[in-house]
Image (tube, rainbow, N blue to C red):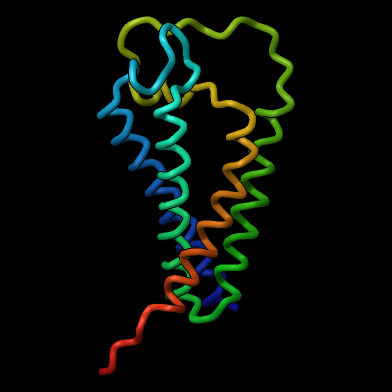
Length: 152
């Protein structure tokens, strides 16, 4: 039980760190004009692609880490469930927001933290991310299981 819990925690932390790193690097390389549509905080198509691919890759690595630590299939299944449930719970406020105020206009350079706080992702992505993450975890766990074992 402890090993499975530690594996889920480690897998989730690896995913979170990788997502933060990927998005930080991507934003630094793209800049605000590449990450957002002109004059707004609506994310660009390029950012959507980076978000989906980066999130999937982070989840795959998290699944591998979880699988290695847990040494069984229970860990990755639990991690996939955690990713799915937490992702859907975090999506609810975004999807049910009734803010009628006009979104802030983007002017000039925007720092990484402000960009994270102001970014407007489409609802379909907010809803898809938990499923993409859970799928990535399961792919990662299968990659670990199918990897040839080295003879020592």
